[in-house]
Length: 124
Image 1 (cartoon, rainbow, N blue to C red):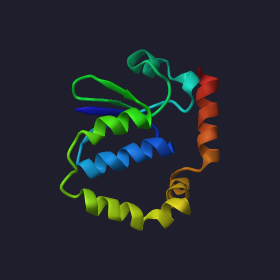
Image 2: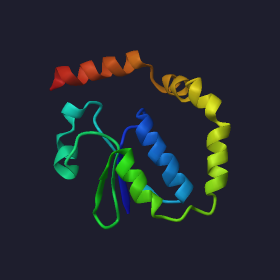
Image 3: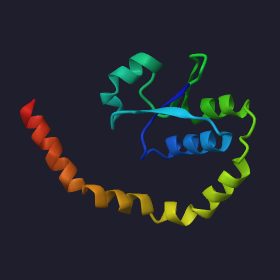
Image 4: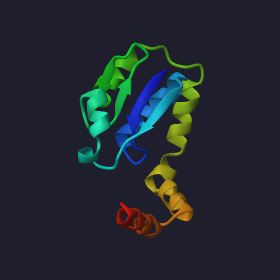
C-alpha cells in the first residue's frame, strides 16, 4: 500500500492527494508533526523532514511534489480521473474562500486547541 507522509494544511500534500484521487489509488495517510524540527521519526523513516513524501508499494521513497509527480505519472489515469479533475475545478471557490478552515473552527476553535496543548504540557 502507498503511504503518504503529509499534513492536511499543506497545499503540496493536497495536490498529491488530488492526483492520488484522480488515479484511483488508495493510500495510507501518515500525519506528521507541525514543524520539521519535531519530525524525528519521519526523518529516520524517509530521510527528510519535508512534506509530502510518498512511500511506494515497492518501498521506494519519493520526496517532494516533483519526485512524487514523476512517480505517479507512470501510472494510468483512474476510471473517474476526468470527473475528479472537473470536481476539483468546480470547487475552486470553496478552496479560495477557506470553506474547510471555517468548518474546522466549528469542531474546536484554535483557542480551545491551544488551551488543551497547554494542559498537556503542564502534565509532562
